[in-house]
Image (spheres, rainbow, N blue to C red):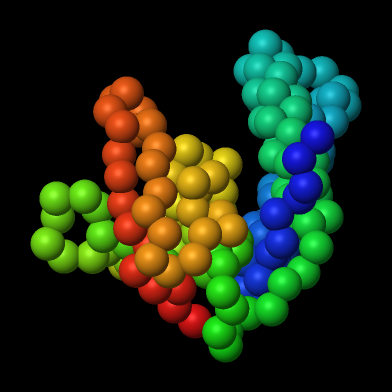
Length: 155
C-alpha cells in the first residue's frame, strides 16, 4: 500500500468545497429518489429510478473525496524542496523551447487558465517528490515516452 500524498491547504480547501457541493446534490437526489406517494404513473417511477442512479454515483464520488481528504497536511507557499499535491510547477518538455506551468492537484482545483495534472496520472506520479532540475519521464496516453525537466516549484 502506498503512502497517501500530502495536501496543501489550497488543495484541501478545493476538495472540501467540492465535497460540500456533492453533499448538497446528494440531499437533492435523496429527496427525488423517495418513492412517490399516492397514485403515480410510469414517468413518476422513471424519475425515481434516475434519482437512485444519480444518488449511487454521488455516493461513490463522495466516498472518493473523503479518502482524498484523509491525506496528511503539508505547508503551502514558501519554499519547499520537492513537488507536493497543490503545488504549481514549471516544466520544460524535451525539445520544447518554452516552459509550461501546471497545478499538481485535483480536477476540483481546475479553473480558467489553470491546467491541472492529477497526482494519479503518469505525469503527476513522475513529478511528486521531485526537485527543480530533475528530469522526469512518463508514458503518455498515446503510448509515447515523454521527458520533461522540472524547472521550478512556484508558490
